Image (cartoon, rainbow, N blue to C red):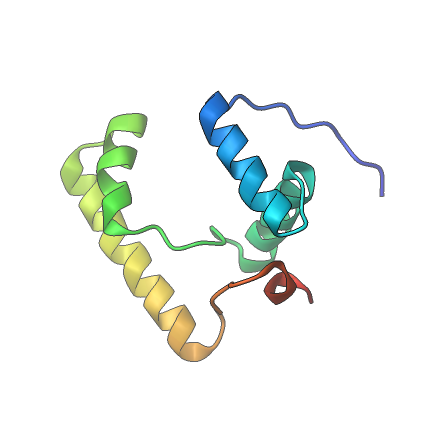
Length: 100
């Protein structure tokens, strides 16, 4: 399948730190983005839990009120908990955990 180029902007310090973590895992940013996109498609949702600490960020970043952010956060935590309990969502500790 042909590849496409994805351009994005990140905080330089975040990119530097992220690259260091990825290097320690034997990955690069391109591979990580491909893995994350594959998991997004396979799960039909975010490949990571959105936690309470993220609610304030989402409220400010996307212009929703804190009540909306809290409701969405509760719903996502419930869905995540049910997915873990049913075995549909597993914790990822290393890159090997993402292999099919």
